[in-house]
Length: 208
Picture 1 (cartoon, rainbow, N blue to C red):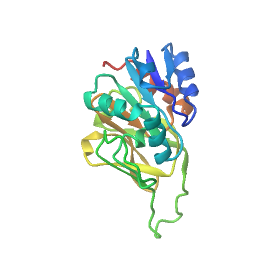
Picture 2: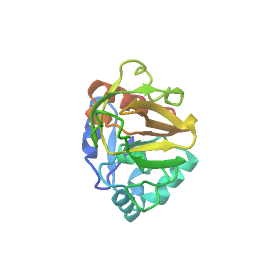
Picture 3: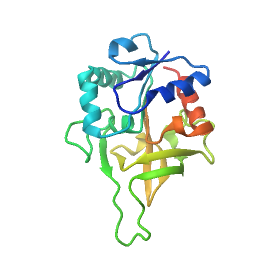
């Protein structure tokens, strides 16, 4: 069973519905106790960094997720804001993140010489290039995979080996990360049709 953390940030039901169509059982988890029987966890999210961390803390998820990430006992997938919360912090807020991936979340910045200047937020479909760390999550998506993005901030990894995929928006930016059984994607697989279905299916089949 897959536990989808329901902390009031975004619409996790669309992720559950897609997993259901793939034949994978998924349940909402309001608190860590609700995820006791799960063999993997998804941390979705849409919105502001500090609000996300505050809500996780209020529901008891902060320490639970830090323990999950450090022990890597169950596969964990962060989606969009959920991926950003895996990092140590963000320029968007003041609160510390979960600190499970070394690095920071920074706002897109483009030099004045970049004409035309890309719009912020970055919104729409973008081709994604899997890297070595993304072999398992992106299996079968090595060529011409496209995903749907909506974000103004992007993640910078301190360890380049933890970069699992990249995309281009004015420059090449990290759009997926992996550290052991911990995964994160900046895009929305639940809005990415067959590409997103394949990625979620891959996650549901990962070996713990």
